Image (cartoon, rainbow, N blue to C red; front, side, top):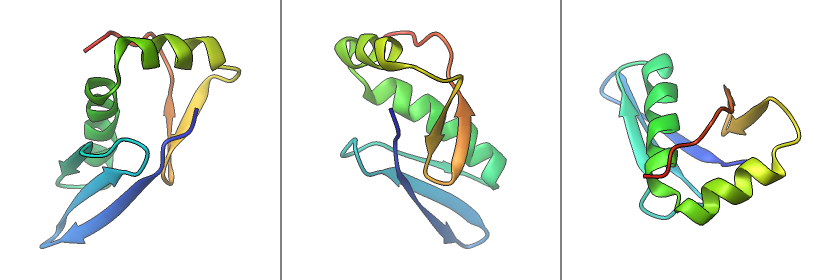
Length: 78
């Protein structure tokens, strides 16, 4: 499953909103921190059913979040 994040730069730091998950957003002082924060935010925004569906659909070892590829691993229900 792919998620698309719209990344914004403001005052030297970044924030992003996940298009497929209304209200799901993250921020970071740089793109590496933003990537970590997006992974955490997506995990918190998904329901337990979403987690199960994503794990069942996983056909590859990574998923793409906007322009950032992140490793998929066991998802813990929020």
